[in-house]
Image: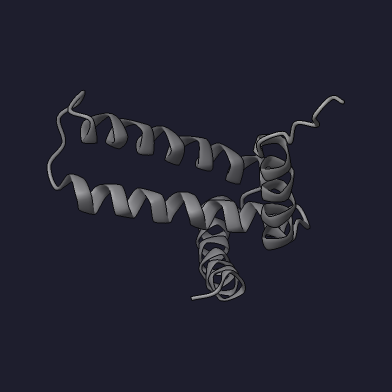
Length: 111
């Protein structure tokens, strides 16, 4: 599935959450609240990665890890859209910068 297709699906799920948030709290979550949720998801992911490394106990580890990666990706897609960031373009630009920074430097021979 392409990134744009993932983004469309993330948007649909976000719209469902917004309806639920309105029912529960009178308004959809703000971008800051979405970011706070993302931080919580990253914390959950970190605990599961520690379990994967044998540092914490966890049952059904692989299923939980896959779920948390999905949660984190969903939140990144939603936050990028809420911030008017083209995530594919941003990713490619960042990778270009990193590849340039990390590429071996060519040495010039002194005559």
